[in-house]
Length: 89
Image 1: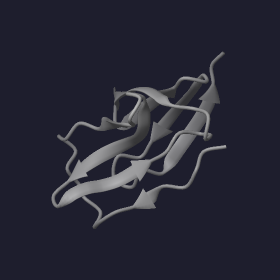
Image 2: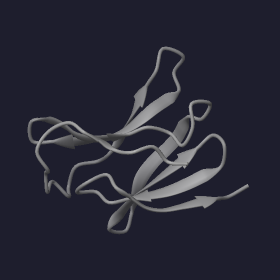
Image 3: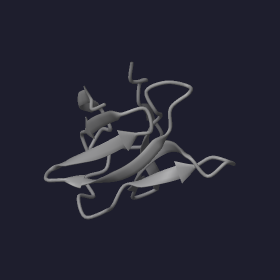
């Protein structure tokens, strides 16, 4: 359901940094990205090829990302690993 995180550089512990959406050519959230000390620390793609991220924000000590198809995913800020995934529709 959720695709594997693709690690891009060394793990970062920058808890004060905000995650953001990487937009594709059509303006949809193609990936959730977490800035790191040397660029992007990690990237998480949506649950399926036909899905897009619509929001991403801090949710306490984790990062919450919501997809167009109704998934709410909680991510570990240090690694980008999926902690939980809930279908909300």
